[in-house]
Image (cartoon, helix red, strand yellow):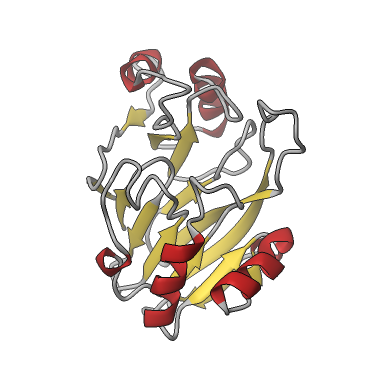
Length: 226
């Protein structure tokens, strides 16, 4: 499994047999931090959108990806289904209903399980959105859990993406504690790109140094192979 991190909480997951899964391509990917375009994401089999916030879902650019990738499957939250159907023109499957659904991707080699997340309180006082993360298991390979925005990691996996900025998501100490409970082999820090809520990733690396859990800090566009 090859995991490439992009801005904020976006990942491209590629399996040995060629399946390609894109998770949470938001506005930070398309201009607000990275300067990628939809053409940078080719041959996508599965698109996962954990929730509606723009740093995870950029409708205009996602629509261009979907229009090009005719056989792409979309998974998102139940409450986001109507919005995606109207704006993108394709009805997604409810990620919450994905329970060990296997045989997905071009290689037919992955299992996806929807893992409901708990979004932290919003600074403006509005109701937090429904969020559903995804646990991806490669046949005869590792598992990867991408929770989206959450204050509660909800699944065990070989590799866990851990939000760390402390605003609407876990802070560094909370992430450390929950990772110790989940015991992944590898933790990849995410959700630290918003300049309004600055956090130093090095502080997370330092906090995790005595845990036995390997931290893979991936800059935008960098990959980790498991």
